[in-house]
Length: 445
Ligand SMILES: [Zn+2]
Image 1 (cartoon, rainbow, N blue to C red):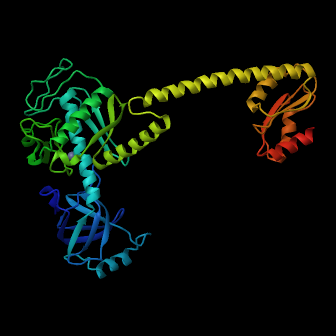
Image 2 (cartoon, rainbow, N blue to C red):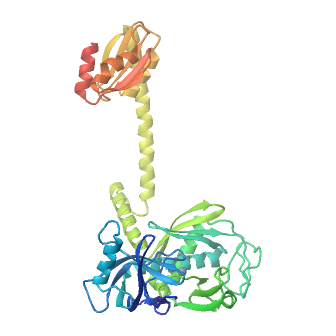
Image 3 (tube, rainbow, N blue to C red):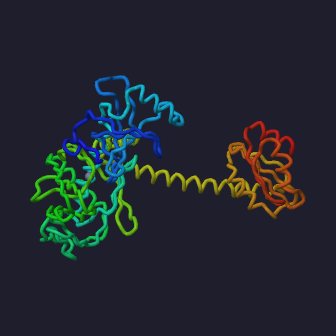
């Protein structure tokens, strides 16, 4: 028996009384089915509702509903496993019965309204943005995902023919307005650019600010629904619900959808696009709506505020000041590289003039500087040299082959915690602390 769905008549109804039809175990836990519900079952890209169920007229005997889904017309409310472990079928059923949850009993179903309203804001925001993209550019929404972090839609620019009142009219000049019956749109585009996304989100926010009515019309068949000014063909063959934003003669959007939506566009609050990327020949748009978009704005504003303080900048010059700092950093890096090169050349000359062999300790040269130095002296002296970087807690070994550098690292450095290695003619290692490095120097000195 099809569960009566209160949200089809009043999307703002937050609770209802109902009669339990059955309680049963199935894949994923225990489920409750009642004759009616305010809970929306997962579908059309919208997650299932959450909330609580309790015996009618009581409080404090609540059981949490963690998810809602649909099976063969029935709405299944998934009950939380409050023992927080494996369901013990017999035990849980007994407990439910003792608490008054038996077939025929009257219950009260209460929505987690915060979760539901969040879903509704996001769902309607998706309609409004898709409608704006269609009207402005002729882009058709071919995929929709409501994720934890953001919503995505995949926009395609191929022409589509919709049977019924709306007729897509083949290739239009870029920017030309379709004369077809139904929602006017422009075509001739191939992908969404950031400028197009900004225009679409501005249009979507205008629709939100106009606080247009959102109406749901029910049709028995696909053919009946085709009388509506739809922006995309209807997939369902029977029981079609069509969601219209604004006036039916010139809607901001009109699309078949089984989800729940606020009854006016203003309740969406805000739509903000985050990024666009190519996806299988389409443009994937990442965006957020409602309270989530607002919360993201707060977070991003705080980051920008910190950055502006750090750079002593305002909105107008923060990017220029940031770029100037990067340029300064690059310039310093170039200077540093030149100085280090000079250091390496100076130390190389000093070593070669003294025969190189022995232990040489440097306070200010890095391990990388010493590796460069080792390369330059390699093959140009007789014996075994150890170059030590105090700053880098590192040693670079270089030899004419009379001593095996890799073997020395393995035998003398590794037991002190030194990490590294090499071959007979050169090797390097890094020590965990100054004491280990000093001990290494002492052993080789
Ligand atoms: Zn929808």
